[in-house]
Length: 598
Ligand code: AGP
Image (tube, rainbow, N blue to C red; front, side, top):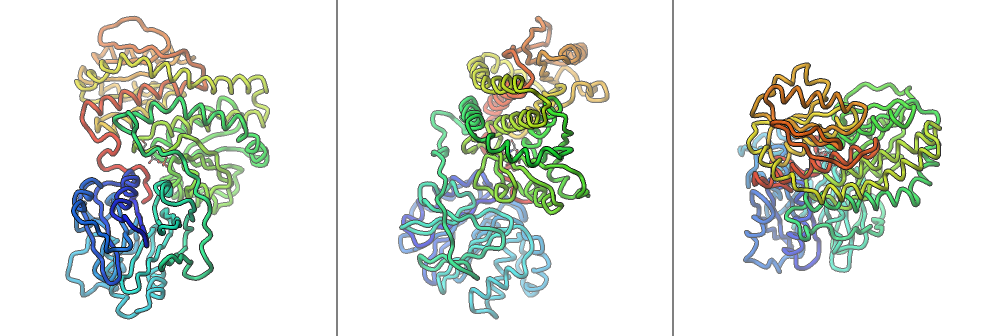
């Protein structure tokens, strides 16, 4: 949940460090810092707040007398948000940054820092101080690093600099770290795409790797040289273009990225995938979908798709729950992990857990250089391009596309749907971008919705069947970027308690696609209106005008495209309400884009 950068033996260190840190800011933005490095000299600057604050503190100096720099942008796990807890931790001998959590830091504090008077709040500061203590008995830095690795437990990625030898050590266990090499230096980053403009070759450290850099030499501590591979570069999505925020840019990119992703699936992906699927899906009893947050909502949609198009059992698990569950190794299941970043710790640990039980695993991800891609048996990629906004939008709808395609591929392989039905469903998927473009063009309702939200104390999203997960997703979007209290409910559940929440200050947003549950969903709206509640209804069929009712007409839907059609307006209303509220839309408080800690 933090971002690490290292630029070793290079020039223009300040400019490059700030540039890369800006691209890593989505990983956490509570505080930031850099250490400029030279022989027997370390200069560290840290600031609370965003990279812009740090950049202001650096503005005067050029730092041209230094050869290297390490930096960090933090999402606080242990220890409050403060300059003292900002990384790097340093003195004139050692500077260190870390992404992750050291689980046994209290134990280490008691063992190695008994005489230490200063209050130590964070796990990383503990490791920094322990390293200094150990260096008194172990002068050789390689041996010292090996000792450190042998005593720490947790998920981490470190960069550690020793000013006496100018060695840089990178350690990786659980958190992502990549290293790139070019003619003007060696570059480290938690996210390799942040190095696109500096390197053409990359190595993604594996768990247990320790890489030592001295001069232009990069080598494993205990074996041969590092094998760099070409870095797959995506076009520069780190700019907002003409949009005010990454989130609204990414909302508007959905027709294009869905079109591109579907084209990829149609042209060649599933040809190869179908063969792999044949091996795993014939003797299978069930698919288990696993994710967190928005990705979990995609799991819920996958369940509806599988129930509709296949005869195979489908279930969903929160990754954070699954990883601690007892699962038998006898069931003939395959686990599908959904993760935009491919680095979410809960999802990654759940993936490793089910693999240890002997199950096949598929990962649906937008990050093709991620740890989950390296861990899973099969990757089902989405091509949403880089998603910077913390609130997931285009990555989510591309996950839905991947899962819709997966369900009909499985249905075809198992002969639950025939070729004609399959081809029609493929056609329906290819028609989604046109429907989304129509929705994006018709935004006249947004101002009214923002006004209704502004005059409400809470907002509930209500839906049934395949749009129930979209009600949950719409509620999460509203919560995470506008901080307004909200919940999503299954329509049939309202009368079992939640309807008690309804009064004249509460806004209910109902999703009523014209399907077999349409009439029931209309009843939900009527019951709320009858109790003085305000209702917004999204539907492809008009309810007619009623007091306290705002209806917004949607394009005609079929089953497979319903989740896409009803997700988009909810993303838009959350965005424009948050804009009205003045919150930090791309980097909402307390959140980060990739939750790589427990
Ligand atoms: C989505 O808007 C949230 N930012 C969050 O719920 C996110 O979906 C979740 O943390 C999972 O992230 P992942 O897809 O990268 O695993």
